Image (cartoon, one colour):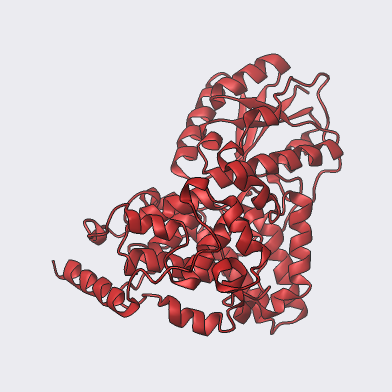
Length: 471
């Protein structure tokens, strides 16, 4: 009955946590640990702030189950070996992650600990299915979403596990660091209090958010999810990112809605979006270059432009295209961005401005509280045309026509752009409270003129694609 160390990362929950459920079932003393290694301290500013808030909330959740969360900083193996020595623990368990850096680190750690006779185990729980479990008829991995979705739906998703009622404590708890000393929100500067108004942090908030969504808004999800001014989306991407809610819990809750009403297309399409997240992790696992290089090799050498003053105007939400700027400002104020608007924002950067998708990917990584390496990379490459399921020769989102179709009354744009209203909304003004002072932005200044003519920008992008293809 020696203790087990439970290394938490992006699984900050008690409910449907396979690693935690298996550990609790052993009856052994459990020592939950969170480590601020390079994978944590290297996060973008908003994600680093948000994971700190999530860790704080999770520590309180553990306390309610009779446990404590031990906090340590440093390289993972060194921290864990020190804890093994201090506590007499003989095992370390964790939940798997699938990005290349995590896989390399975890594989080396597991081999090193097992070589010393220690019990090192990893568990599922971050996705609906493990990335290697779904295979095509020829045994390969899926490169197109629709067949992937059909395979996942046919395979089914394991039922979620209940949260343990009690976690057996060790005889003596190891020492812990003070989360405040980590200063995970320092890079946010004055933006942190703004983000805090919109974040829904922790497991209890995530479960409540799911219940509220399924009690009403999901009915309008199929159509409403494209209209950024409507309250038709779940907002759960933030909580999924840090594992504050299980994807399996969400999947089966939506399935229950469908079972009660077989014609409920909203819940079905909600599950399809959840499956898209799995598809992103599936691709990242099998083709890790998705995160850093063009996924389609024929796009190597495409003449995207590098960083520039134009990219700065895009980052600052000052392009003069109101729907684009509203999305970028929403991200800076709330830490998230409406999904359709993400596509429009990305298309404008990579096509109308012809700027490299990596610049946009890095900016999202710095500003999103729901940043996920797989989803972020897949989204950017899909829009740019260099990724899976891409159709670059005609998918050029026109922000003006998109605004007319999906924000005709202008509610979304006015909510986030102070210059468009005599009485700006709180979110619109909050943007100027959050941005760096060196940007010298002022809501009293006139809204900027468009950077490029949309028709000319589209023509230039298509000509570049044709020329690259012909070359």
